[in-house]
Image (cartoon, rainbow, N blue to C red; front, side, top):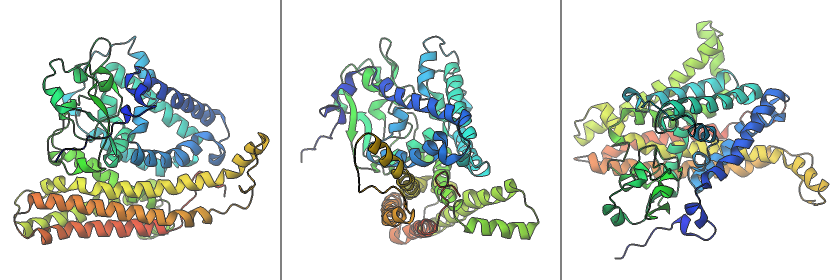
Length: 470
């Protein structure tokens, strides 16, 4: 049977220029760079009331929901248009990086620590409620990207440091789009390998992903460098089955086998269980739990209480669930690897339910936030002479969009659970020597437990962080 060629977005009318225009990424970065400057200015000098400051409203309300929807529809759009890379690229025209990123840091452990630190700081210091701290976070991102990538060759900030980038790249494993080779046989006769080494003054992939051996979107920022560097026009933005890279067992260029890398496993664990933790921090039972801890230990320190929650959610709970599932799998299947090795092999199977939870949660804030600005939007349209009489001005109840979005949230969790079940089943069939159905059951129970927790969390009333004044 003849294989149907994949759809290439760069071959579609209206997008062909993107594959040829050298400054395509700059054109995408510039608007976000200007928006970032606006948020920094407003965050530092504007009203320090979260719902009335663009820094907190855009970052913590609108951006996050748009980000997840964009990742699921068109891929890693933010990293492609990352504003933090614009000053860095301009600086590299003057300052050539001299150093190589240390070998002992060429992994995801630093990014894991920074992602946990970000989650903790978000809750501990109420970043969603502080325009000033939000602005400083943006400034810190610009400074870190500029300092690191002006000193070290390649793109170590994106590959090894940036927690936001790791979040995006994990989420984009379910994207229907990837940067990929159009005709693999053409690469077999290529002698220059420009997609990785670059040509003339056009750099190749600075994340060291060799296109013919690249698998999926992990570690790919969709920077378009390989597309512009390829002299044969053999790289495009190809459509694919979402999540198919999570089934692949082949080594990945620049990564190796993620099934054998504990740093990737822990990163995926923090991402997945962090989705549940982030939602738990916004519902009333968390305060009941804080009160119980205060009563039991006579400690009122918010840092201590939050640390207990983080240890329970990101260490004890996943270790018990995954460790127990791995132990049962080993007993049932006859597989004799260490428990940590088994968990590493199965960990990617839980990404879909984590992505589903982040999407369901962030979509809630995105729609609620948009709903609350409808009166302002109508007023602006009325001043411009455009009449939208159907658009209400007052009396907007958040209960309306909540009722509208709840079915979508449940659908996302169910879809993510099904995908996780399929991937863990696929892993089971490749590892289990006997009784595959029974060997898969422990992982299925973990998925059911996570799905049930996600549905319960989403059914609870949530804080309207950065949206409503109370």
